[in-house]
Image 1 (cartoon, rainbow, N blue to C red):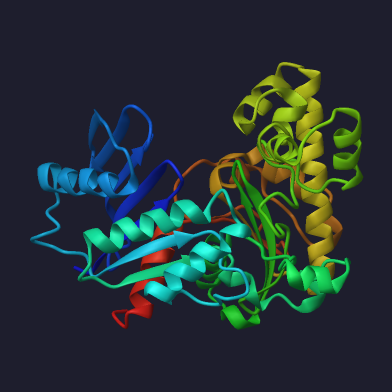
Image 2: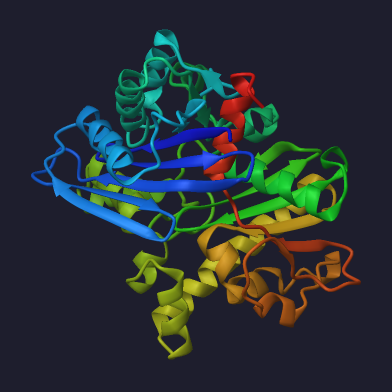
Length: 397
């Protein structure tokens, strides 16, 4: 058994999974949250059993001690079966990290410095890395970057049309995100259809509360919707996606909103939430079915943006062989999938209604047998992908 402990750390919480890479299964999943608040919460799941404790967790170092005690008390024992390595999800690798990277002191410093590009994400990742390197000082630690998969973007795709001296000074460019998911899904799709990855033109739609779409040519990301930050691109649960920059100037002048308030407004109070008052697509669909006008509009705006990006990316690729839907909305909403693809029949995209409505686990085809373009639902597994890349870096895969 070759296991990897995967850590996904935020500013006040961290998730963890113990992954058996050989069987591609999660032996344990857990969450340590409300770090730095009065009372923290630890949830540790082994098989069908779930254990929860409330106790003070002042910082990430204590959080890791709590996690280790959970392994000792509830299993499986990390002493009897220690992980081969620790894999860390890091959101922003900037233009410094093109691949998963073995963490040393210098790499840790670089990740910390890149917090200027991801102030909501990288600081938490650094705290988690420091705590984990202390708790598992004898094991290799690997950083897997959300942005790394998109380092293959050509300059025409990642360059913003602004003064280039300023852009270079402040490292302003499109970086893209959800790269670990896009990589996993595109490779799983190629394996499923039985064709070499290098031969395929693919589009992957990662549709969750955060959402992005990526055009993948021969296994390489050539265009993606998220940009300098995860705000750009598709309409999301609480994020606006693409918006005229002048909107922020108007709000700053007329509402006297500060940069911090604008950041909160666009990231946390916009998207379908801003239109319909709810951020979960299941609630949007329920209200839409009941005739709620705001929910109808939110759904239409959401789908309109999906179609616009799909059409643009098919044009950029010069055609498409496989379109894959993944993540919470992508995997579970037949309505969104059908609506997004409804106008693409002239490009050879034909969805089988019965297949699309079917709800079952695992990768599956939802296009018709005679569709020139294969449409798939591919459950993503970012933790497994992080575990695989971690072992590859350490030479154990």
